[in-house]
Amino acid sequence: MPRPAYHHGDLPQQAQQQALDILRTEGDTAISLRAIAKRIGVSAPALYRHFSDRESLLAELAITGFQLLRDRLRRVDQTDPRHALLHIGLAYVAFAEDEPNLYRLMFGGRILPKGAHPRLDEAGLEAFRVLEETVAMGQGVGYLKPLPLPLMTATAWSLVHGFSELTIDGHLPGADIEPTLAEGVLTLLLDGSRNDQSQQSPQ
Amino acid sequence: MPRPAYHHGDLPQQAQQQALDILRTEGDTAISLRAIAKRIGVSAPALYRHFSDRESLLAELAITGFQLLRDRLRRVDQTDPRHALLHIGLAYVAFAEDEPNLYRLMFGGRILPKGAHPRLDEAGLEAFRVLEETVAMGQGVGYLKPLPLPLMTATAWSLVHGFSELTIDGHLPGADIEPTLAEGVLTLLLDGSRNDQSQQSPQ
DNA sequence: ATTGAATGTTAAAGGTGTTAACATAGTTAA
DNA sequence: TTAACTATGTTAACACCTTTAACATTCAAT
Image 1 (cartoon, each protein chain N blue to C red):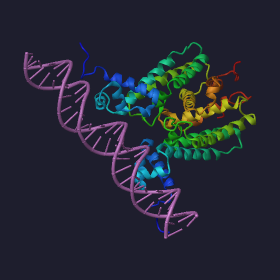
Image 2: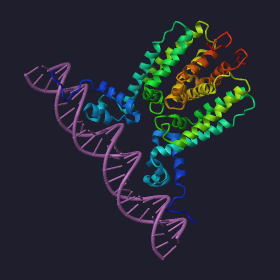
Image 3: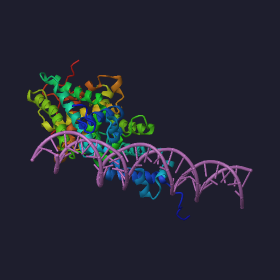
């Protein structure tokens, strides 16, 4: 079976890979169907056999991004609630810092509007659930205040998402100077969200 | 002085106004120099006499956005620290909800990279300072924990920014159902950040 | 009044997503 | 085996975009 000249094999996956590569190195605005096609050695309209349009291709990219994020959050050790909550936050921020362009694509909003790509929304939910379950666990063992779960998850998610975005966009100058800013921010919320015992920040 | 036919008067301001109008109604991707020029009744290259390129025009838009945000935050009553902190957060979120497309442009990151437009960075800083001063005031009167100011402001800003983005992008479904979610999220952080007295959320 | 700077104009280059029409490779069925 | 069908590639073309170049008009100042 010599190399097929006309039919290509797995153009969809190659296209995604090249798009991800462009995204990482040059940002999402540099992702053009022509550029992807040229890298693969194929004509641009060929991509339309596998993606209905450019936005759908970006949506696939964002989906794999959410899967990467979800896997990363799942790897956090869940034995101790405090450790789990802190490190799931740190893992979240670390992902955004490692993949800033991908993170922006996932949460950009303007490019991939919520509701337009059901599988993307589902992938986002799956990542969110890891965070939600960890918060629920923290409440279940009595470590966190017994406030409504949606309220606590919204707060936690807002904090890590906001910190991630502000950091990768360079709005928090302390992020470079002080490598523990993320930990400090997370600890501040965490200590304030504890049940029973009077507030205390260890150390 | 009858209406000048060739020279236009104040093309820069009209261009900004039309761009803002397009941004609000159709999103930033719909902002094209051609569309702006057509609305005004002028040729597209004419805009290059007043803006070095498309990105600079968007930067001007973002600058006025930061001024609007700053003014809104300044209007918050600063007599009581708790009231001030809560309502500056609510005002921040309300701005993002009222101007989602403008807010995304201001904080998009991908379109207007930090450092490329000094006046834009300065405008952003001015808005941030209002938040920072309020937090400092809260610490000054002993209402908030005496943690480092950069840490507390980073936390507060992360929370309001994250909540705003997640809300306007539709990731927090409770935002519609429960109009007090913003207040709950802010109160959770606020109560956890209080000094001395044991945590309590006032009914 | 003439010169020069501002501010408009049209023409054109080069990039983009996307569709249409056509060509070829692989698969299934007569 | 050959015919038909489907999948997947091709080139050509359209409409739109930003941006530059070359030219025209208006205004301000010597």
